[in-house]
Each structure stands twice: as C-alpha cells, then as structure tokens.
Length: 281
Ligand code: WA2
Image 1 (cartoon, rainbow, N blue to C red):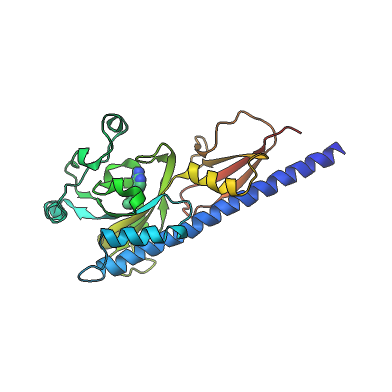
Image 2 (image 1 turned 90 degrees about the vertical axis):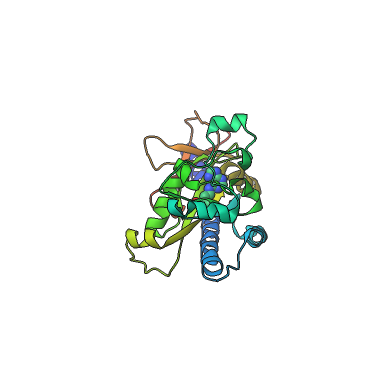
C-alpha cells in the first residue's frame, strides 16, 4: 500500500512539474516569436523606408500597446550597428554621445541616469540603443556591446540569424537576475544558408528583449495556485557542473524531486525546472 501511495505521489509531482514547465516554455516561445516580428517591423519600416516611418515615439507607443503579445518580457529595445568611422556623425545627428554600460559599483554612486554615464571608449564598433519601450528607457544611448552578456548575444545573433539568449545575469536597474533575447536586423533578405561573414556584413542593428525571470515566473506560478503544494526552481544548466539559478530559493531538501526539461529555443543554452513537494508525506 505504501509503495502505491509513493508511486501516486511521484506521478502527481511529475504531472504538476511538467505542466508548469510546458506553460513557461510556451509563453516564452510566444513572446520570442513576437520579438522576432518586431525585428522584421524595424527592418521594414525603419531601414526599408526613406524617410523612416519609425521614431522613438512610434516605437515606444507600438511596443507598449503590443506588450500583451510578449508575456514574460520586461521590455524591448532596438540598438543600431555603428562603426567607429560613423560615430561622430551618429552622435551629432542624435544630439547625444554613445554611453558605456555602468559597472556594478558605479551604480551605487550614481543615480543610474544616462546623463551620468561615461562616454563609450573608442572601439571598432558600437551598438547604441536608439529606440526603447518605456519600461527600459534607461538603456537608450548605452552601447550594448560594452556589456559582456549583451555583447556575446549581439555577436552570436548576427552571425547566426537566430534568436539567441544570454546566460542569466543581473539586468540594469533591476534587482533580479534575468536574460536577454536578441535578433539581428539585416539590410536585405538573406537565404537561410547565408555565411556568418555575409550576415555580419548585412547587419544594421539588434532588436532585444529583457526577461526579468523571477518576477515573471512568480506571476505565472501564482496563476496556477499551486504555491502551497510545490516548490519550483528554474536553472540554466548549460554548464552542467555549474548551474545558475534563475528562479527560486536554495534548496537543501533531499526529498522527492522531479526535473522537467525546458526548451527556450536557443540550442546553445540548456534549462531545467526542478519541483519538490512542500510537505513531507
Ligand atoms: N535590456 C534591458 N536591460 C538590460 C539589458 C538589455 N539589453 N542589458 C542589461 N540590462 C537592445 O541585444 C540588443 C537589450 C539589448 C538589445
């Protein structure tokens, strides 16, 4: 009888965990598709029309009104590819200098205002944010290539033409760990088998979305009213010997555990959901 009860318990935990993992994965996938569509919107109406039909006001209003299409995201923004030779002209045209992303200790002494940030040091190229959803307006004018995670994402997005994800890291002006999703925007339609060199050459900018994972997973789990029953953790397990926590508190519990796999659409990153019962049998 005891064995039967244990089997039932295992099955219940597996079902609850798989259901939650699937919901999170599906919502992520839906928002990823809409971020992709936004990249095509910028390509069509900003780079494809002369004069451009997109400015900050249009981008801000459109992305705010369509935010419901991108569950789990905290905001979207568009950064332009600017070569060093184009920097002076770019800065004159926009009336501001390209800023360097602040480091953690600078955040403590400054008030996170972009006016207080240092100009980006000389580099071959930059990725300053020119359009943003209101929720992430603090990244406008910042060179996204000056942040390690953002830079890696930009390089991989443009060389592959796929949506790519960062490892979890602390987002600007957020107390939580999050991830950034990036799609490159190209100046022409590229065949699926285009070489990385051709892709890099054709790149004009980067459309990115930030995901504040803890608060968004919390919201999702809350809707399911299961919080009294199970404890959920979400991990980036790309490096199997050093997983990174994305949601949930540390667990020392060695009781019944179920692991559901999560596919966020970037083959380079691996994620898992771990579930446990709150109460011992
Ligand atoms: N967006 C919001 N908060 C952030 C962040 C980011 N990146 N990086 C650190 N904190 C415009 O890939 C291009 C968005 C980067 C896109």
